[in-house]
Structures are given as structure tokens and as C-alpha cells.
Length: 112
Image 1 (cartoon, rainbow, N blue to C red):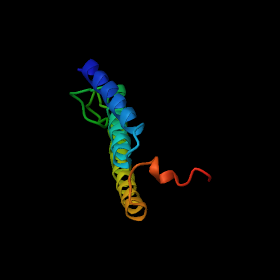
Image 2 (cartoon, rainbow, N blue to C red):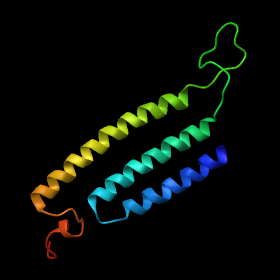
Image 3 (cartoon, rainbow, N blue to C red):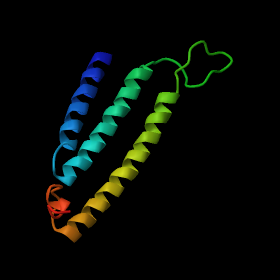
């Protein structure tokens, strides 16, 4: 199971990096979102998938599951949603003002 997650993390990092290197703003935004999901899976894989124990120690519990990876991932999901929404609004505004979403055309004049 952990090797499958590791392969999935590698594939998501590859796709995210490919999308980040494109010239279209929407693809760049999707690339950052996919990279964030890959990091979430990486944290989950590194934290280990443990079953059979509560997240907190009790007087009668012998084993426990570490709640820190889940807390980090939950926080990262909220931050990813906020930054993706901000990037989408900024790219929409740039498209309305400049009339294009191609980063090469957004550069302006060659003499600048």
C-alpha cells in the first residue's frame, strides 16, 4: 500500500511540475493545486498508515495513532483552497485587464 502511495506521489509531482512549466495561467494554478495534493499524500505516507489504535492515549490503551499528520494535512487543505481561490481571482482579473492568459504575452514590450 505504501509503495502505491509513493508511486502516486511521484506521478502527481511530475504532473504538477509539468503544469507549472506551461505558459497558461490556468494550468499553472492547477499545477500548484496538484503539487499541494502530492505533498499531502507525501505527509500521509511518511506518517505511516496505522490502524487499530485511538489518536490519543488513554489509561487502558497500549497503542496509539499519531494525529499530527492528519492535522497537518487538514491545515494544508484549507490553505490550498484559499491560495487556489486567490490565484483564480487574480488570473481572472489579469485576463479581464490584459485580454490574455498567456504569460509570454503578458510581459509587455520588448524594450522594457
